[in-house]
Amino acid sequence: MNQALAQILTRTKRIMLRIQCPYCGERDHTEFQYGGDATVQRPALDDTSIDAWYSYVFERTNPRGVHQEYWQHTAGCRAWLVVTRDTATHRIDAVTSVRERATHRNDSVENAVELGEVHR
Ligand SMILES: [Zn+2]
Image 1 (cartoon, protein in one colour):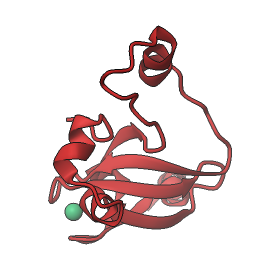
Image 2 (cartoon, rainbow, N blue to C red):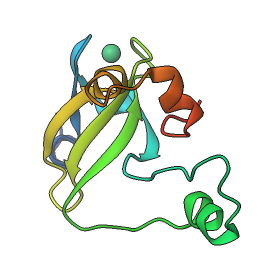
Image 3 (cartoon, protein in one colour):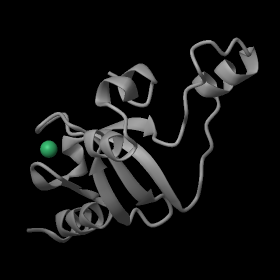
Image 4 (cartoon, rainbow, N blue to C red):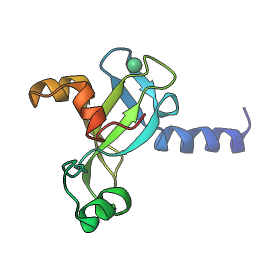
């Protein structure tokens, strides 16, 4: 292996995210698709405030540090996951399925989809 290829592989390894899918095990992030900010809450369906809906649709923070994100295991089980990741270091602290999160919140996955917490 030549030196340039070795350097590329070393750099790639450094930035490669490994996500622990609760169903499939640890996989490269290339098997997943980013699904958005998992902290955004959809306004109530009867909320007619244009500001609330504008904020929900368009406004996102770009936090530096620990953040919750939706990821879908598109090349695997296709499950939606909530990944708690440090955006500065890419360290992943926790991965839970959206189904499990909805269960803990005494909610259903269907409600999570309806509420816009999971984008299809
Ligand atoms: Zn999976």
